[in-house]
Structure formats: structure tokens, C-alpha cells
Length: 151
Image (cartoon, rainbow, N blue to C red; front, side, top):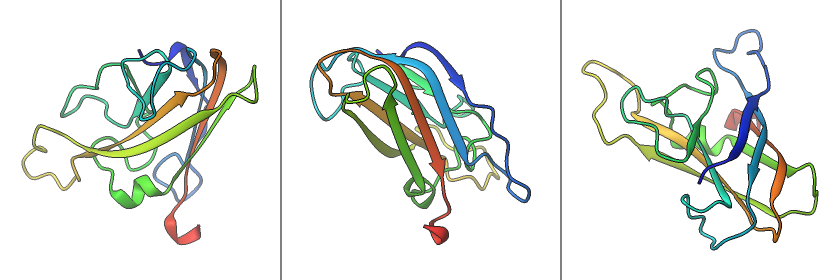
């Protein structure tokens, strides 16, 4: 199903000395009332997904929003340490008590990386599921990427 609504990403720049955005905040998305799970089933209306995949090597999975190109180490170049460094904060602004669960996964591309490339050929994926009995209509999903050395 993916998120309903239109995703709006907060305009955040990289700090001096950084090569990538460290915060991504998405608003304007919705999820229907709880259907089944966990684990989340991406085809259900209660589940939405984000990916760092931007279709350079593999197509973007169905029912998935691509993260901005400058978030984190970039498309097709994520490691397990990068994924572990993401903190995801999800909030339903209309009904604050709605239960939202998030999961993260490192997903390898099916197709090989371009010859001579030094990328990991893996992408970050963040899945958000609404466990509430009602729709989550005013979501804010903030992803903060922290270096593991400062955690």
C-alpha cells in the first residue's frame, strides 16, 4: 500500500564538514488502521516504507518512498554500521497515542554494482506500521543519522 498523502521532506542542509544530510523529516503521509502483523506486510494499508534506493542499480521496490539522495552515505552505499546509526522517531500528530512501530533493514541489490565501483551495493530500508485501531492521518517521521562513535 505504502503511505497515503504527499510526502514533504524537511529542507535540512549538511553541517560544515559533512558530506551528507544527517536528518530527514517527512510529513504529510498517512497510514490506514492496523490490518495484520507484526511483522509488517508492505502490501497492507497500515504499512509504509522508505528506501535509500533511487533506482540506479535496482528498481525502487513497489509501495516505497525514496529517501532524498543526500541523506546518509547515498544510494546503494549503505553498511550495517550506517543502518544502526539511524534513529527513527514516528509520531501521529492527530492522535498522539497511536502506536507506530518501525523496523530497519539493510537490503542488497539484486544486480551487481558497476564495474570498478567501490560502493557496498546495499540500501537502507525503514518500514513504519500503524498498530492503532484508527488511521494515522498526520504522521511525522524523523530519521536522525548519528555516527556510532558519538552515541
